[in-house]
Image (cartoon, rainbow, N blue to C red; front, top):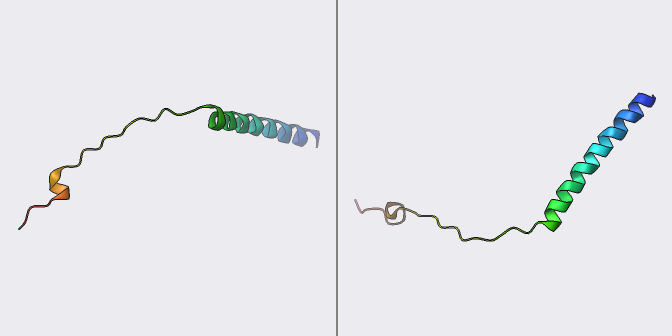
Length: 50
C-alpha cells in the first residue's frame, strides 16, 4: 500500500505544479491587444445579379 500512496502523492504534486503554472499565467501575464484586419472579397458581400 505505501507504493500506492507514493504514486498518488507524485500525481497530486505534478497536478499542483501544473495548476500553479496555469494560474500564474492566467493572472500575471497581460496580453497585448492588437488590431485584426480581415479582408473579405466583394463577391461574398455583394454577389453579382444573375
